[in-house]
Image (cartoon, rainbow, N blue to C red; front, top):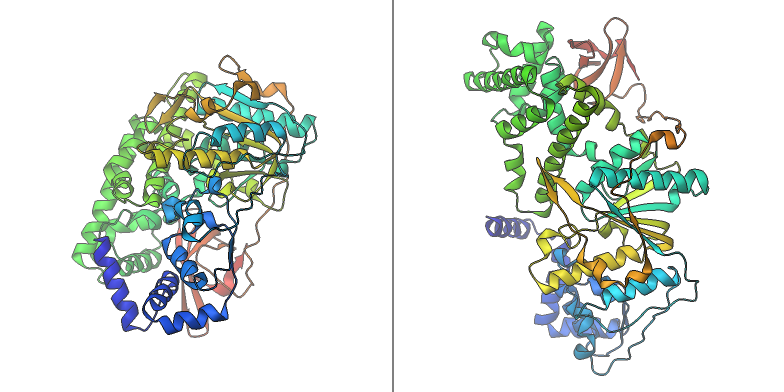
Length: 558
């Protein structure tokens, strides 16, 4: 199917005399190959070619540069084959490794002095990357001092790992007066951020996700939470609208608009309005039936929630709606990532249930989980203007540097990733990725791994990353934390100043999703906007569950 879509897309571009960014490069290379006079004109115009980050070039970029520079042979490239980590988006490490074969007797200048990392971290990184075969042999050196040993933490599981890291950060910040912005945490996959975010929120550690989205703000997670919110409160119109046609169940935008209008006219919630749709002439009989099927499904979940704990309810919702299958059948990296996030959400509810039972000696209900969720999904801590810890994937860390670096989840299956363990080339790229993560360090490096990790609804044993065995143990100070039990009483409660977020709107501007207030109905959120001459009519879902159409003159923007 992908090939057919691509071919149709290319034909559409040609019919419309258009090109996309990839075409700009591809067609230029084709032009140079087929029109020698054009190639020569540009060769004489650009007699000197310089390229940075050459290790990240793909085949088309390589051909473009080769053709352009082939006449005068004045080409200078800068790159580090040990930092080639983007093969999954087309980069070819062979371009830099075979440079001296493509160009006759080039001058190779090895810039091996490192100005960032302390000698001990650099020595460990050199030992790690020396195990790769596909590389230019070199060894980085520095005039900086040895620095501290690399701290290596052996933890019980991912939750315990997060507690250990959180308390270490508190120690750095509160005892040693280290700014949070000088601290970064690197992980292999986005899904690993969830347990860290939960612990940081609990410990009042401000953080931001670099190049990504906070776990509980990711679309696939917000979709599942919307199901739970609607089950807990069927009058939640916003959650109803979010999931009524997700995954797709044949309910289109026009049908939803008709339902909105009908519910507002009758002063019903959307959920309640479904029972009276026989009197809604604008909706087709098939649309009415689909709305009823959706409502019956939610009713089924409500009944399950009365008798089953939250973790079992979540699994039933995911199985019945086939949300996980929806993303699992998407073969893209993004689809796989979303499926992993859903599995992590299931794992988080299992974890919550286990902890709740330990503390309260009973299974947690949906309502008890929703109360906890309102705390862990708080995004006030992501304000980037404040002093915050940076969380990011190892790929997003490339090109950055931080005085204090934590690498978490240093386990086989994560780094190297389970999908990159079939070939030597894939393993070597994963080793380069670990090398990049290590060499972001300016002062001190911390690495941690867990003995077990929850995956979906199972707990699996895990093993330290094979890359740790590539490094001489003399570089590590090892901490066996498996018998360590944290106590929040060991350090003072931490306070943060919460900031409100400015929506950036003027009083006469209304947007779907805005929070507003009415003198009689209280606070709510705008669901739809319609202009009627000079008047602006707003459909608003109030916190009371009421759905009302109100002229904008009587509404105050919050």
